[in-house]
Image (cartoon, rainbow, N blue to C red; front, side):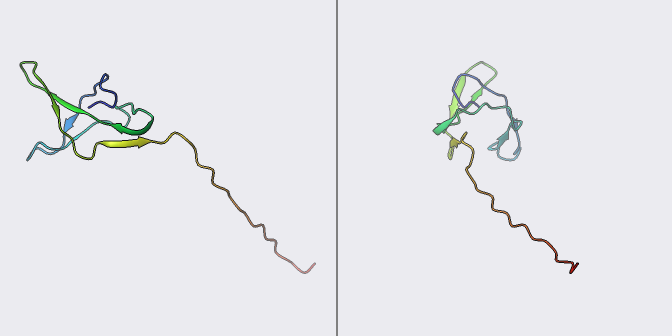
Length: 82
């Protein structure tokens, strides 16, 4: 599988019944930043023939901008009567 079409990562078959699912280590594929990026998969047979696989739902967006959440806090004190 590849995110840039140049750097390819080997996968492991995770569905031995239909051979339609595969996985990599979580950090194995270096994603390309930005919107509308696409993952590509290919198969290379023992003769060296390369087939690019048609993937469904292979688009992603890698958001590298941190959030700007605001944290509001309230401090309370206990009146001990002294």
